[in-house]
Length: 196
Length: 196
Image (tube, rainbow over all chains, first blue to last red; front, side, top):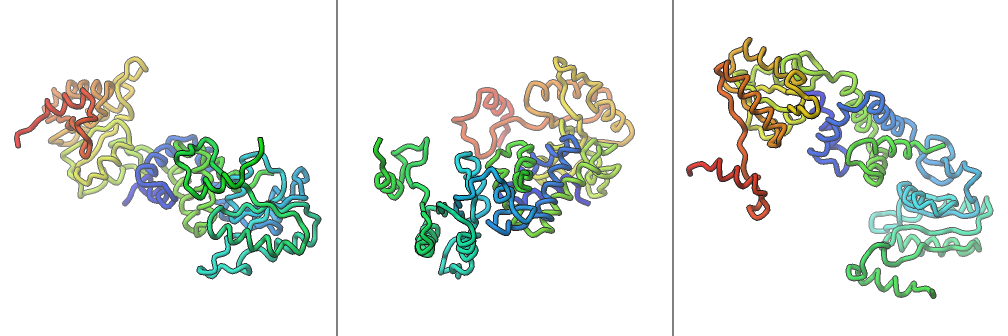
């Protein structure tokens, strides 16, 4: 018979970036935690699996029909930021800078993998723009080949709607060192220069 | 209302070494995992909290009266390896080298913190040695001040029992570089030299 700790360690190693040693450290920490705190983690995992679904408007992950961002009257409903994945929303939310809504494509164009526009939530974005008044669509797909292709495609299909379409800026990461910037980033940083 | 993902992220940051970014990565991974795998992690956490207790013989963590090591007829019951914490057992088990039993002290002597011999499972170790025939007690407390003090103390209290008492070896860590060895480790490595 294997020990229960051993079992928990094995379960934890299913998670990405959690190797055997980390899982071990976590498992013994969990054993020593107040029971209610540990059970609260277990419940949060269970909840997310039992209740998680996509927001019917923006495809963020939520446990209700509309996600907490779409449902909030405090958000600026005249702006929609388009991202590839629900997790990207967290990254933008953390900045505290953006107060608008989102639209998750659930992927990026990649014809070679069979990811055509119909496979993404683009039709739903167009529907949304037809039904509500939106001033600006900010495209925040990844700064890589697929993300760029998706941004270009969106620019084209959004053009007839007459809505302002913007793309997040490229440039040097803050706190970075010019010495270590790759050529593409550096070119983008020069190209995007602004008057001080 | 906060999102369920946001809630899971917060719960995961309770764990040691899990910062906000890692928690986020884990949470989105959990959302995308097959439900049964994720629930199996949740259950393992719940199990460990609801069922974990100390083995009545060696004080390892277990869900039964005797831990799976003490209960195994395949282990060498004539050897007892004394460790400070249940987690230390995992480290030794991973080597696959040791086939004997364990005894967990649940700490190390530290008079300054009020950790006297009575606070550790030393009396229980002596009882165990009186009741069963044991050929060797291997002291595997930490190679630091408290661990050394504990090892010395054990050596003294075990002497009258006439059992062979050994201490795990000190020396250079494998794969390490002499260049980076501290003086104490290097002295111990020299002192413990063996004929080739």
